[in-house]
Length: 187
Image (cartoon, rainbow, N blue to C red; front, side, top):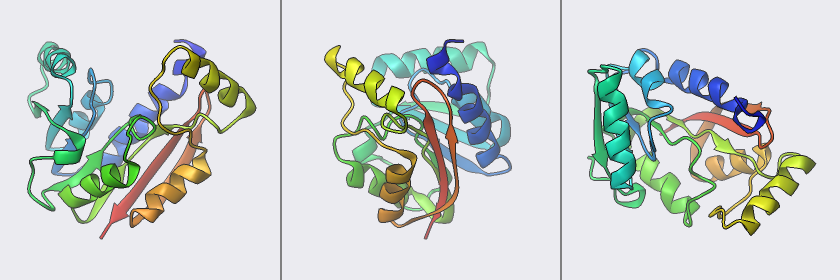
């Protein structure tokens, strides 16, 4: 795996651990399903969503190929989730918060659908965590990378806490662009 990808396996492992033993888990911005199997391994039911129909099609194929029975894949807009309030034991949004144009709105959407005391897991690339990641991030921006914000682990934690989420775990996963693994509870 490339140096850029080094924090990914640990992030997947932590997300799986964070949802182990839970009932209903929502994965937002699931993409092609990198994290989905780890969530399905420990939770009773996973609903994996993405905004892109093409991503959902790839995700569905991955789930089918892996013969994962407890995952349902749906196309969904993070800002307009069609789920009842407090209907999930946990919500996972991996590596997406740096891409959203409305961070408070995105976090509010996650908080709305998680039950009181439920888990919110938001591992996110921290482009400004190190001098090297700062340089790499600016180089990526020149190629058209669509990032809206560049977090440090500290600024990510603050954004999550500002949304009313009580942070219970934060870990910086080293890599070319480190990942801030943040897990918390809401309500």
